Length: 431
Image 1 (tube, helix red, strand yellow):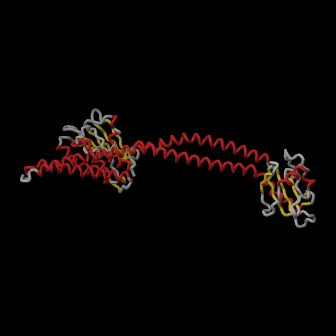
Image 2 (tube, one colour):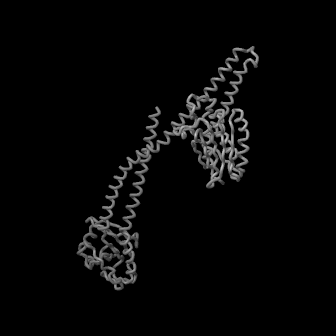
Image 3 (cartoon, one colour):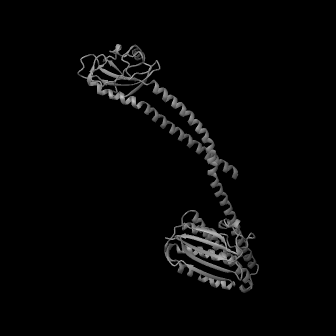
């Protein structure tokens, strides 16, 4: 069932990526094509519109007395029969739509215009495109003839052959389509790869969540089973005095406290996952703060025949969340006490270096193998494979510790305390 869901989700990512790539290629293809096409015709259109300057010097039969030298002298390679050989050919039209300067424009152009072109006068002084029945392509602009004109000329049309520009645009379009299709085919493989990469964190989170639920269920079931068994035992002896059943009662209370702590830790981690926790920072005297936090633990260590020593060299104030940092130090001290034995020592050192507050909690206990140092920050991970809760705790403490450090944008790492033991080093930026 899980594999089917994973494959379905991966296919969905694959289709989304493939469609996204296709839309991107289509959009960019249209943008590039129209930009190139516009650039190809821009000079022709600009020169056509400049012909408006020549209207004031118009004389019938295609003459422009005031035309700048060379203005109409650029030759088209193809239109060799055009009289005058101008790239921009002036055509005179009467009010009935007849060409008046047939001799001036040449027979080839006249024949093409006569069979496949009808003068449109609705949009004057605007560049238009037309492809005639002969296959020739033109750009043209139509102007109203000057009012001072005494001939039958009603409209002036300037026309330019653009077969070369059109052919270049078509060739570019074909190349662009081929390249886009090729790129899209490559994007199919990229989409498949990206869908797998996108699924990796999802699957990792899914497995982590499944493992978390399984571990939480196991951890919750064990104390509940113990409490149930002890309470059922008490029900079988209703006439006994409380003092006679102190052991099952005490054990049940211990398991209830264990459940309460685990529930609090789970709720805290749940808020951490939802980013719902906000730091409440305030200026704190670092040395004084650490001294107050570890004071109760010195008595606990003495009761277990251990010693706690300190070396505090961070005599300054910094902005931290005192509640969370206290929780962090308590977790690290509690961890050292659990994994140390009578005669071992636990040390707390602090210093300020490179604008970081560095706190080290070291012990001479059993230590943590190097291959397990990253795993200890995972939820429910414990060195005690037998899950002995007396020493292993809930398996959530170091996960909470790392979350607190990350919340302060710091770093926590585990080092060897030679010749034996472990060092937890915490680095928190000074504010």
